[in-house]
Image (cartoon, rainbow, N blue to C red; front, side, top):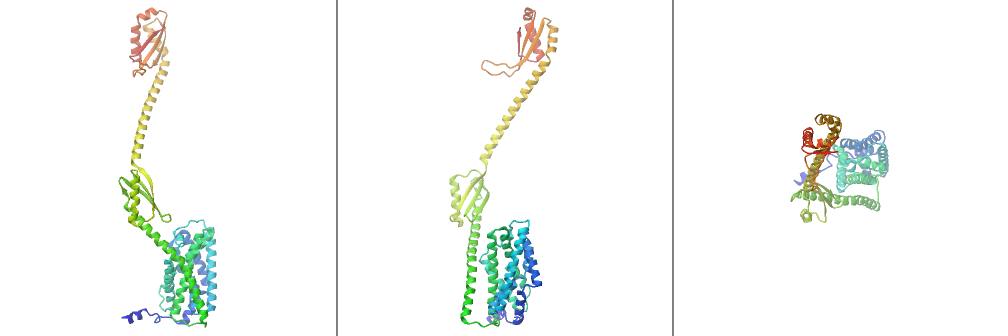
Length: 436
């Protein structure tokens, strides 16, 4: 059983000829002719994909990018002590990196789209998981290179390791002077480079490729130390970033569980929440009734039930039903007062109109009353308000009339008839008659 398993895992049965593998690696190192043009196209495509936040375009750039060639060459040449090939690989790698940074920087400097979308942001926070992706991606890549049956492994490795996008994101950081983008993305590119090269080196040694040059034990030890130092320096920050990522995910998961448990509390309901991982803060905005200090303390205490230690819960009051009802009552009161004032205004306007009309009817009134009482020579009529002794205005409107006559005695005899005529004429029971 074990022998069958080992036989299934054996790499030597489908292994390509050593010379053929060497030629493939050496050919993919050099950026000349076709490879150079493909590199240029991949840079432009990746930059545009990042700029417009298109995942499909970015994947396309990763598929056609030849950037993995010199990285594989670096690992292969170190494993076989082929120093001439190592120099060529380093030169072409440096050229490709410089060209990619320059081209992407120029592109992002002139493009009118400057927002940092999710595809750009995704390349700025590498973790230990990116180390594992690069390592196993590199292993898959070199194994595919050394076998006769390559299949679709190489395109898959190109997508998984994603060399071109972080390099172009670093160019975005240079163009916009956003150094967190530059250093974060370039660190991700460094991780991919180092661990693809390391995977190639380890696989090449495991498959016992022929050595191109002989070195002594001291040189071998020195080379191994340099390799270990580079791997260590590259890995340590990613472990820290991976730890912070895990802690962030745990905090957000526990915070969401906590929030789902406190959506409705004694007449209050949660309108909105905000989680700030950096500050370890949860902001809760409640509607309904106002939360008192006791209820707030109870909600705060529940954080411990969900593994949220030293978390600051900030409360804010949103829509309050009691305040809403109070404002609604005030609004109704305002409406009532407005209607009352409108009624008073309409009454005042009607009174004013009646006074204006009354003034225009003066000659007609005089003619009408003289036809009955010829001794009257002049009359003045005005609409007035009557006040009782307690100072209240009577509701029934009235009129005051002043009569002038050359025969006052006769007027006094007919005073009752004159008042009756005025009451009928002005349709009012309140008539005050005075003789001048």
